[in-house]
Image (cartoon, rainbow, N blue to C red; front, side, top):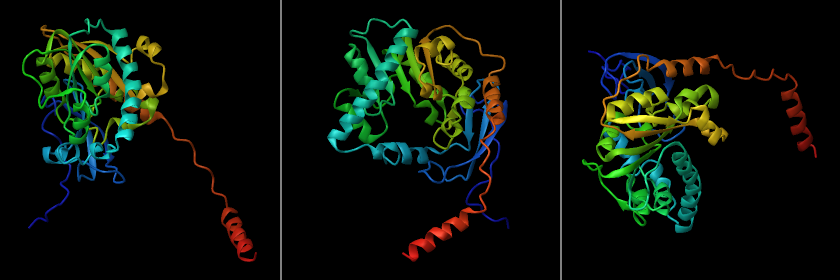
Length: 326
């Protein structure tokens, strides 16, 4: 009789987590960080890349039960760490508004925004509502979707909160600010958001920047048990095309970087798309950016460690002896 394994052995996925295409390539294997709250009980995860849409995704994916326990109604994720103190929460909202105002300025600089007065905007994964605050200040009619109970309650004091994405074209602008990396199937969400976006409406997407991992050196940020979907500009372009969006601009473009030269901007990939009825083609080699990024990251050598100091232990014993003999 074969022994029962509490942790199942890693087996290759049958197809892409997003587009279901079987043309997959293993890219990376990494241990789950056990020093932080975890989504999955897995010891190790493998990063696979899709040869059709370019998405990189961690495998095995967490189950719906595990995701709900961490992010959803049980509030086991970051939602439980939101301060219940009103003053602390207000300061947190104020800090986020400053960052989101800059993001809104970058959106306006890289896309032709429709007149905001009376226009409708949806923030998918709105958190405590700071992005919605910025949009409302500019005249947008705002709505948000947020699975975290505490965050949704905070945002709901100032904005309309929806329980699901509308099935008909409703919004001229949709925002998905650091949400898709947490989802097992980001294409399904993009498709729903496209259905809720009016023709020529815009999407603002922000995710961890897989393509610049050799620059920011934070590979745990772009691939982990929480950030289970990893994106390059080409992957976003392909996923946009499959969902019904056309990629207009992205933050890895040198022209964009002149507008946002902050060092921390390297860690995130911002993409702007437009809702289009046209059928868009996909790139021939969508995994090229991800592979080049990992190769570049692997070529970076860590700083050499200091040589051992043979007198360190002796000096420490002398200090202890002097203290004891005082």
